[in-house]
Each structure stands twice: as structure tokens, then as C-alpha cells.
Length: 416
Image 1 (cartoon, one colour):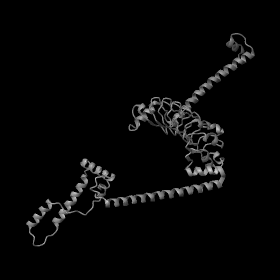
Image 2 (tube, helix red, strand yellow; image 1 turned 180 degrees about the vertical axis):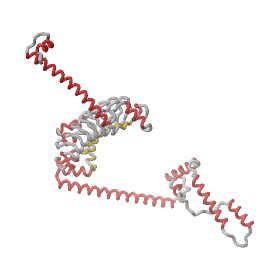
Image 3 (tube, one colour; image 1 turned 90 degrees about the horizontal axis):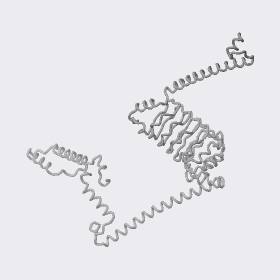
């Protein structure tokens, strides 16, 4: 700048106007600033990478997954494709990746990490359960390669819209509590209509529009369990529990209580005619239950009377018959079953033989003989009589023992 002639010679080899010189200097300054900015971005990216690795200590690499496998040989196989479960919770990892070899994976427990998106599951075709609660996920995506997914848990994330689930035709349970769903009203949940979800948990979200009931939940054909409490719309739906029970015909469980058939009838009556109709319906339900109980009791009494009458008829016929129960050539069903049981016991005598019981009985018999020998004799008996009596006791069977084994009921033939 101090030597304009030199500067003009430097930039063009010929004389330059003041405007051209200014433009050239400005371009040179911009070039230097761009280089400094690029250098700053590289340094900042490197610093962020170091901070990220500092928080998580490691990254989700194949080496880390191998360390995880080697840490518990009882839980994991050495070959990745043979494992059906993977536990990577509380690792602090930021990206879900390097699962290409886990083709046999059926359950992935990846909660409490720093994943900001669902990725790396394209080859996990057999995945059935995916647990990604308490991460940093903002959108439901990356599940196209999991057609067999049955259970999906996305609690405590930053999801604003339910989407990307229409192709999961086996999805049964979706748990997505404490997210940011509902700011845009029904549009955030309308894609649930095309799913096969049976259990839906959307507690503690931001669903404010009460039209979500007729526009979404009523149109879900497979919905059986619904958790909706903790949303602003729960206070806007008229007669919250009765209203939902009346319009969702297949619902079996709402929030913290099951939906019984009596509750459904009462809710439909309330929806039809108000509180008076509900009270009348509950009276009818009570009368029906009383009538049903009386019918059951009457049927039981009739059964008892029929059995007694048949027994009296059999006894009277037996008194006039020349045969007894033992000599009757006609075998009844009870006798046939008894004969089959006895025949089976004879054929399997060795299998049902109770060695422990026989040993216990022998021990009791030996105790009886010992007590008999230890009993004092009268003065007129000599040693030879005692010896002969001892020999006789050993040869003949001891008298019937009235003592009962503690565990005799276990081997009772009648019980068996």
C-alpha cells in the first residue's frame, strides 16, 4: 500500500486503477479470512470429537463390540451372527452403527445413550424388540429393514411426530412416553391409523387436540390397550373414561385400569341417555347377575337330586336282582376303570415300587423287635426261653403297627 507502483506491478505487471487495486486487496483479505475460517472449523470439529469421546469414553466400533462379547462368554457367542440379544445401554455412544454382522439379533437394549437417530439396523431382519428410551432421537426412521419388529420403546426422546411405522406389519407395542408429540394436533398421530399396534403408550406428551380420539384412536382397528393420561387432551375430552370406552369398541385396558364388560355397558348407556340411563343399566346388570347366580344354584341342586335319585334306583334294582356288585356280569364304567388301574399297577409294579417307604417300614419293624427284646421278663423264665422267643420273633411277621409315617400320605394308594 505504501508503494502503489510496486503493488500494481505485483498484481498485473501494468498500471492498475485505484478501484482495481481495492478489489484485488479485498479479494486477498477474503481469501485469508476463508482460510482462517476453514482452519477454525477443522479445529472446532476436532475439539467436538474429543469432547464427545470424552463423554462417552468410546465410540460404537467393531472393536468395542468385540470387547463386549469377550466380557461375558456366558451371555454372548464368539460369532456375531449367532447372538440374539445385545446389551449396549449406558455406553454414552452417539451413533448406532457396526451391526452388519449381527444378523440373528432379536432384542437390542440400547437405552440411556446419546443416539440422535435410528440407523445401522438394515441387516437386522430378525429384530423383534428394540429399546431406545432415554436417547436424543428426534425422528422415527431407519426401521425399514426390521419387518418382524414387535415391540418398540422410544420413551424420553425428542420425537415430535409419529411416522415411519406403516411398513411394520408385525408391530404390536409402541411405547413413546415423554416426548414432544402433539404440538401440531392430530397430524402428529394420524399415521397410527395405518398400523397394527395393539398396545399404545403416549403418556406425558403434548397432545392437546381432543379430536385425536375420533380421528385416530377410534380408527385403529387393533387397539386394545391405551395409555393417554398426562396429555392436555385428557381434560378436554368430555367424560374422559366413559367417552373413550364407549367409542373404542375393542379397548380392553385404559390408563391404569381394565375395561370390563359391565363398564362398557354403563358407558354406552351414559352416552345414550345420560346419568339416569347409566343408573338403570347398572340396575339391570345387577339383576342379571343375581338371576345368573340363582340359575347356577338351582342347576347345582338339580344335579345333586338327580344323582341321589339315580342312586336310590340302583339300590332298589340291586335288591331285586340275584347278582351282587361283585358277581354282576355287566361291568360298569367305574368297575372297568378300577380294573384298568389294577392291571396297570401289576404291569408296572417295578416302576411304582417305593423303596423309601419299604425301608421306613423295615426300620419300624426292627424298632418293635428291639423293644420287645428289651422288655424285662418274669423270674420263672430262663435264658433258653428268651433265645427261643427271639428266634421266633425273627421268623414270624410282627403284629400290625398302628404308628403312622409322617410322609405316609405321600404314598397313599388312594391318592395315587
